[in-house]
Length: 214
Image: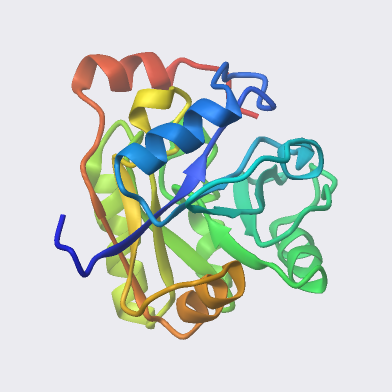
């Protein structure tokens, strides 16, 4: 990691997600150890972490939630209120924006883990996750990256970690010093972010593919 890099893992799950056992304090500790600037806790369909867990940290903890729409997953960054699941993608995005958050389409082309697929072609006012460390095939990430480049869309990256050790495998790289959640969201909207990182091994990907996804 270059000393000038400002890296955030913007897709992390805690034990508030039914398919994850990671303790919030452990997630923050590993993020600090890996010298991340911050992480977004984006549990499935709940913001319990951000409403109930309060402790000091040396990194920025970004509010968020991963919402199950009728077509697949959408992340809302910067929000601390729950959003009903099973709405349309467009309704979910509208609700995120009403709450002042940033809608991010997580692993859009990963049909094994509830990506929204072709629904993405209808959207223009969202950020796209172009590097997800848990995607079973890198072609899903590459396709998302191509879509971003072709349409000049904001992008993010995240580990989609369901285990503590996976935090930081993929991340969002900010082009400017980022001191707050507000800075982060604004810089992403202004396309001052890119995505990078690695991904799980083949055996680990197989395990993740067959986990429960909501």
